[in-house]
Amino acid sequence: MNNLFSLSRSIIIISLILISVLQLNSQTADPSKKVLPSPEKKTEAEKINKTAGNKTPSETEKKSKDKKTASVKELSKEQMNEKQKADKISRTLDYGIQKDRKIAINMIKEINDEQLKKSLLQKLAAMISNDSDMEIRKYAVTALGDHNSIENSQAVIHALDDENDDVRIAACYSIGKMKLTASKPKLIEILKKQDLANPSNFTDAVIIALGDLNSPEVIEFAMESVKNIKTSKMVRERLTLFIGKCGSPAQKDFLVSLYKDNEEDMTIRSYAVKSIAKLKINESAGDIKEIIKEIDSYSFSKKKKYYDLYMQSVTALVELGDTDSIPLLMNSVRSDNAEVRYKAINLIKEFNDERTIDILKYKMKNDPSSKVRRAARKALEEKGVVEKESGKNNSTEQEENNNDTE
Image (tube, rainbow, N blue to C red):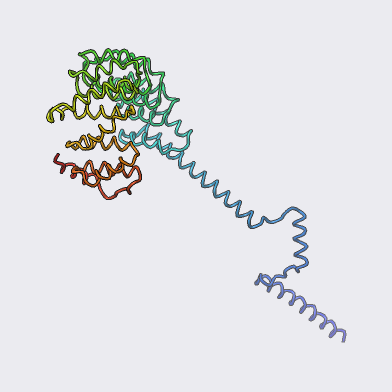
């Protein structure tokens, strides 16, 4: 009997052990059947976490954080691209073939980061004095002017001493763009050393640069050079325009004398009256009208030689605000010469009265010259009177110009 009771108890114990093992295996095989904490316990756990300061970020906060992270990454990427591009330009300037180096110089304008750009422009400044290739030096000087790189102004001024004229011409134009007044003494010295009897593009560039820097101190030299019969025509023309840009009404007598001289070159006379208008020498209006009246008295064949001077004279009266210029313009609009009408249209478009609009409309539709019709239409487009015309290309316009038989 005792043996039977012991056996039964052993069987029960073994069964309980087996049941426990089977339940454990079942939970391990199927995680979804794990015992979850009751809602009460979960709530309590959340309270504990909240109390401990371990609150999970809200969805809004997370999105905001993600957006900021993305922006920073994007900015960093952009900055990295800028640096990579700048590094590539720098390496190309150092080691590239000449064609690629020119392209690299032009690519500097694509760099937006000011520090990176500054570093590249400093490299260009060094190249102006050190590079053996003339074209690269010229490109470098031009680029410094285009970027208005004032911190490298001395390199540009020093380029005036370059052995190559093209580099020196580029330096003159960059000096004018950058308004480098510190270069004035050097430019004046160079101009006075030039052989003005032999025109050159460099001499022309020096005069233009001095004009851009507003150099009235050169006026006396300019007038003497224009008077000198040995001075080349090209230099005299440039100096006459220079006087109009940097002079004053004090040059009235000189300019009027030049303008009224029948023995003088026609272009120089035209530039003289242009300078009179530029300097607003209103007292010269009577002299201008006198010349216009004289030209009007010429025969048709002789008058053709004076068309440019005539139109420059009328233009001068318009710029001086003289009321007598209106009927003169009207006469020009009616001229048999298409070029005179064309120039008159480009002058009359500056007026905004109703009569001007009517004239331009008529010319747009009825003028025999296609060039004049286009000019009238363009003037009306600029005034907003007619819509802009599209569809015409340069070749079509050239064909129409060739078809003008006047």
